[in-house]
Length: 136
Image 1 (cartoon, rainbow, N blue to C red):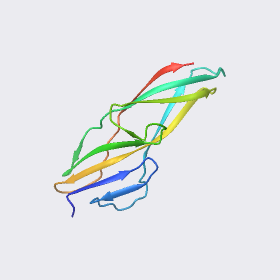
Image 2: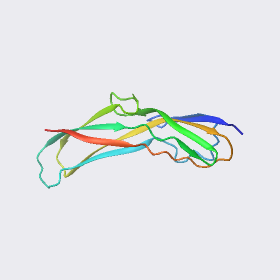
Image 3: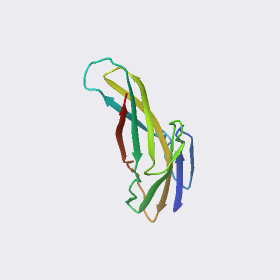
């Protein structure tokens, strides 16, 4: 049984791994995020929005003899192929005319795992903060 391994999932869904025992690749893929802006009324006036996102460093995982950490964030956002925790990402939602406008994107990364004993599932949340910085 391996004691260390990794699994890396790109923003496009490509998966590479070594030393990680996986029962099935079903459901393996990048995280999917959606940023929404609700204008709060039914007006149809065109709006151009700019939003800043920051993905914080996720907490380390430890349970059942396993430790794990996420690194090497990747996105499919133009200009942000690789990002570091704490880096500001600017996204635009142009020509917003609906009540709720949204923008979705994928985030991939690398999961490094160390097994001291036992095993089990690993779940690590990715904290994200979003701030509306411009409405035109």
